[in-house]
Length: 206
Image (cartoon, rainbow, N blue to C red):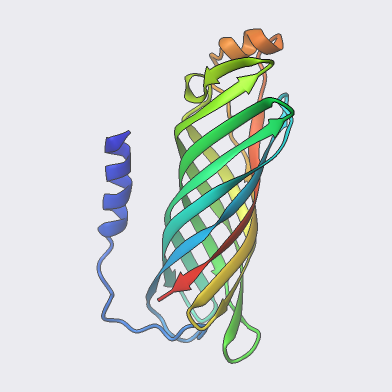
């Protein structure tokens, strides 16, 4: 786990430094890199053979982005995100590290405000969690797949250096390993389920 986190952080830091390049916020004609911080929440659910209602969790991250042309941006970063779901006394709590890679299209609403619809994949890795299904408690990642893959779409808004976004993350990969035994016995057989989430984030770009 430590090796994985070190590799991800090193990959981000290995990008050449462009700190000397000034970025005009909400301007679509400045070709350079930008950085940012994000804080928000994820309202997540599970859908499929296990279908559970919403759990609200924290998201915290740092991003790096690059302007490709007048209107197109590419953005990635490193996030900590609390996911899962609940249904009565049953629950699934997931703690994940996420790396999104999204394309954004900038639309100037006013001289100071830019709208940024976005779309792209998210690669996730589970670092912990706990689960209770049908009255039985489990160590979450004994049965859940550590790696996950989803698609993120939504829209951001930038005012000078301030940024906010609303998005939705659609789980693509089955959240459970193929060789699940404990959960399979508890629910009467093998099954598939996906983690989805409504995302609300605020932050700054610089």
